[in-house]
Image 1 (spheres, rainbow, N blue to C red):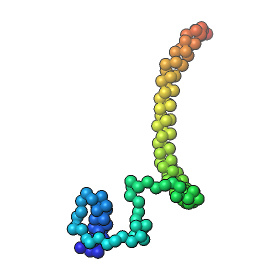
Image 2 (image 1 turned 90 degrees about the vertical axis):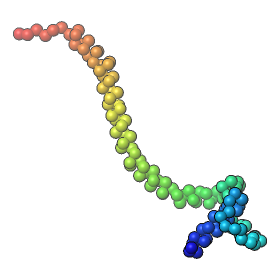
Image 3 (image 1 turned 45 degrees about the vertical axis):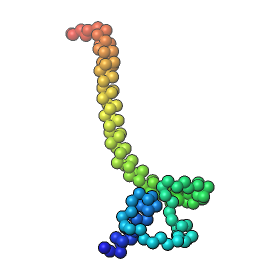
Image 4 (image 1 turned 180 degrees about the horizontal axis):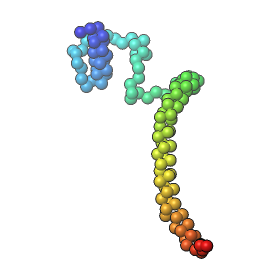
Length: 122
């Protein structure tokens, strides 16, 4: 195996040891964890991160950095989805107006034509 594979297996083993459900290799002698390695460990998905520790300015800066990408993604999506949605709405509106004209407008127009006296021919 390559060093990369060994590193990946070690990481997987460390994760599995943390949860004690399965260990792929025999346990290695545990060294006393240093304070630096404990601080460098990332929180688990189940860890609760206090929101007070998040700096609002960092959050605003990050959002400002992401805004152009959000705008780009939204614009691309709208450019693709909006014409299709408008076309479907246009077709539905046209069909609805045609139905309404046949059901409501045409009978009224025919009634008006029926009231008109017949035209005399000369």
